[in-house]
Length: 381
Image (tube, rainbow, N blue to C red):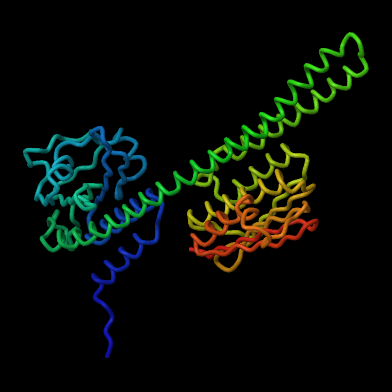
């Protein structure tokens, strides 16, 4: 006969699973703090990630309202008990933190805390954070009961898994920074090549017009019209590059609004008609939304810069708990399997990597003279 796990074990299991679901650093920190507070039934919980200047790069709390947090003021420094956990790398379990000789007080708006349990979060020999709880709740109204050795053991398990989750989040953010750096480098080359060519042609045409002003005014007028056309093309190139360089506001606006805004700007910047339609899409995990955005940007870049398309249509539709993105153009098209070099040139390899990186798939339909359709499907959270 099977038995369900004890509630304590089930709670630990749920907390560890929750931590493993997130990649964004802020989401990971918040999940760890909420899980710790609920698991040990404390009134307050916090997690600080130290910086190299005696403060905290990130500091997340649970049990304190937004209004209270604003009233408390700037992030704490590494001092008192927090500094002890970070520098001595050992747990701190105190009956009353206010009576500890290392206690240095707190701001006037800070909630009152007594019993305290804190642990450093370690990645090998490196201290990557400090996790602490205050004011253990009691089953009866008898004041604070204080944290036990069992609580410390439980928090230690949580801290070990928190170290893995934090390390994964740091690696993810570094990977994303590298990807962004690579994209910016590519865009810089594109910008340099496209705009430099236009400006060089502009300069030569202006010089030709100047030379013709006196002896052939009619031809000079034609050259000046060409100058105006080249200048307009250079402006279009610059606008398009700025759209791609501008950071996407995914965190604030979500995928649908971010795509709509970017596509509206591209529609204005290019002679091609660029449209966007959203069909019942729900919010997706951050990693999926970012992958969809980057693939759409790459596909739009190809369609608008290389295919000679007169129209590009982008559709984002709900698909089960996930979504499917479709970018269709009426451009020159290509043979997807013709050469590996063409695939690299059009960014198909990186697009496929982005799709598979979030558990999705990417398909490409194209033929010379028949346009291109790129479709990316991702699962939900």
